[in-house]
Length: 404
Ligand SMILES: *Cc1c(COP(=O)(O)O)cnc(C)c1O
Image (cartoon, rainbow, N blue to C red; front, side):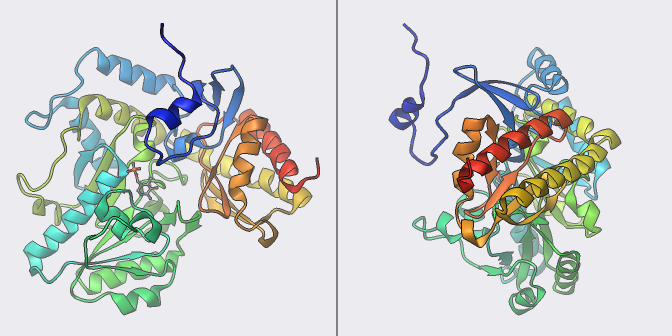
């Protein structure tokens, strides 16, 4: 007899590196989800900025099904049409000349860091290997990317970790001036820190990083795994800042829910990854590439991107209205549909208490660190779902402050 899986199966059968909520969603459509009991949720979490077109968007379902009947996988001893089309589309829509495809954000960043080291090694010699990144940054969970990331808790106990990595302070150019020199091969930065608390970079900070990198012939790497593919209202956030990186990484929204990642770079740098220097069995898989191509083409349209800007304003207005009533947030910030609401000192560290209350009210949301409520909904979330989701959030907040 087959048994329906339950939440307790998680504790019995899975390693305890996550602590999922009690509810198990089984079906999704647009910005709504239903769990095993048929309870409905509005989705402001978006799979952590992944489900950029909501759940089961017809464009993505069609791309997946069409490709599923044709060809799934070949490995990189052959190339395939969807991967070639995806790469061409990424190049035509960005600063990049060359693309490396993989299956996740961590892998895209791993490739970016290895490329930077290898390029500097080949151009300048072994001494040029130092990497500068930032406190609170997040770049993935491989040993290299947790070491470059600025959250020590993710690398503690996993040593020895890769060396030659130093952390400056985000939005503090002076801290970088003290760290960067001619032995620096790369500076890695998120244009807006995601996991670190939804903190947009100051334009002058990114401009200054570009200048410092140029002065020391170091590569500027933008980790746009969370901010990319329409999330901030432009295809990539760098386009709004007007600062062009040498390497850019993308994942999350790129596949709309199908695992895929990409590293983008220029003709000046790409040749360092010569034949056999790097690779991934699944990277550029036909099925993943077909879905990503459909997602990219659908998102990179004025209709979707302008919608993101409009919905950003709606989110802000709703959150400010809630805050006028309940006085829980110190600041509401973010770009596009990556929005953070930082808790006031009276609620210090209590953002995560909102999540189970919201679940009870029928809303899925996120946090970014202990003090910031985060929302990363579908880029095409209907305005009615925003209004209903905010009504549910308000009920959760009311319960948090104990007025109800
Ligand atoms: C999520 C995230 C990653 C890691 O992506 P995975 O697909 O989980 O490996 C890297 N960088 C940033 C900025 C992210 O938000």
